[in-house]
Image (cartoon, rainbow, N blue to C red):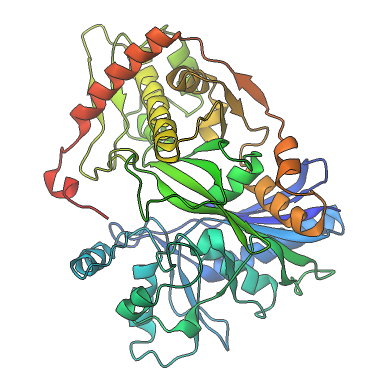
Length: 485
């Protein structure tokens, strides 16, 4: 009754087995890093991803034994195009962070079509222009999940799920089909597109693996993390703090009223699809989180390791009224400003290294509070606690600062990457191992719970100071601030 999960992130491919008690074992990882051949370019090696997928899956099964099914989790919106007959990629994969199609997005906007450069649509159009300008070849497009499933099925399955399809920029707003207007504008043939299937449901067999287990769970990384942390009922929310930060909130079967972005800056997402029915959510985004700690370590030399930030920040009681806005590459929800820049406010001669480091951690925590408040505003739901995962959640000082900033309990995931659990739950629901969303919600057991220590008055004052600092960080590069996607 176990589930094999293949999880393709931005740094590599991981596989592990999830047992019916939600424990994870026999985990194997192969590093597959993106490359950046030019500024703003981010490329993936599809062949290396396929090879790593088979390696980690086979090594995991060798130790773990038979599994009932397979779940797939993946970085979203990255694009791979390959020849249907040979299975050979026609070029590099283009990562979701790649910004080379900004100009194409701006040109399309003049035509009344709004697409963001981090969505798949313009990346696919660009790859097709390079590999098949006449649109005569028999090619396949896929996000990373599609490529992984093609690999596991020996080229018999060309599918994606609604969580991944929904962030390509190619779908209708209600998730019922592909947007013909956008396909026509980018000259994307319908035959290139994968079939969209349930996130939880049997779609075929992984015939290249021993026993040909059923592929029955698919989700983009953030939605997988949402499910993995048991946020399967309306009003439940999780945040993942890695290089950047994303907060996702489950809202139920009714889609948000806004088409692309709510007034508070969140985006509607398909949280998962089961038995043909979509459960919707909203997503709030910060562009810089853990990367700020990496900046302290790698570029400033203020700390020797990311782990040092916890102890150093904890050596002072507060920041001495120093505030840091983590906008190293712009902001995100709720004020989308690509021209905002990282900002320190309140530095004095008395500011020491501990206050400096603590200000960075607290700044990221306040951005987390921004995301939560935006999700509540755009959904009308009250989020009474926040579940968290990601590398930064190993930092107790940061988690305590987050609890104080949001003014409610923070529940830390028992595993750093909850994506694996989420993909397993989706696959397991399809096989009857978990009996639906309520049982998945009941399976959640936090690794630890951190309560806020600030009272309401102190928290309100802190948030007011933070918002003042955030305002100072905006519109530093007016040309970029003017960009809107």
